[in-house]
Image (cartoon, rainbow, N blue to C red):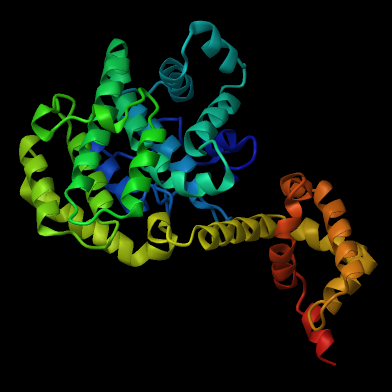
Length: 395
């Protein structure tokens, strides 16, 4: 199952047991804990919350975010209903919160293929709009805010008419609290400015700027009723103030004051700090905000990982095409022990792009600008070809 290709939700539906009865007997408390372990709550997805999904593919963080978001929404629905209508209800929910008019919502989600409609919605929720470098950073915040969708869906299932008011209030208060938490830092750096800018650009329900931020005592804490909401806001604030890998006394005091305000036990805050520090320790290289100082290198590393994933997924077809192209195969072998001439490099580029055009999921490399990925592609192709590809060159 490939969450980056069409039909993945239908395949998920057919093979994982989702949409047919309860996939797992988790209550909302347990669901949140498992989502926290995957990194979904932190915006850095490192695993899938549904361990029953079997695959030979290596998923990217964005693909894992899609899987975790869909699973969380389904689990939330199936904790209340067992009628197999999860897809339709999730689409109706997103139609209400994303449309500005009835005609627009009907235009967006009027297909008879509900699974395909849901795939488009999830794609738009997980993948931010904007330039490549902007996407590289905004995914951190956009995807950390995805859990708000799950919380809003829970409210929508019980009282649909209260969704808009609840969503705007909850999201606005969370942004406000993160802003106040960041202001507690003794030294504000460029990252703190960046994280607030991205937070504001990631708002889905109502735009808000720093001039509209309220003082702590002015914030309305009415939406913070359920355990999941309380724990989520504490975890999100801990993540924001831990950007420098240090939680200062004044910062921790702010979190404990917030916990007291929303009636969350001090032990829960202690657990949040420990869980975050453990997650960062085990996954630091994958967390965007610890690499913000070198955006170009971070962008290159992400591109390199995604390119390798695509090549591996199309390994059999790619090897077959390369082996059948004798000149390309010869030039790739030559490149393993000498520098190709400019003419030879152009031939490699042209022939690789011709091959990519014949493989749909690799066609992106044949688009204008795909040439910048050529060094990455050539670097990994020898790893995909038979061992004799390099061993023969040793003679």
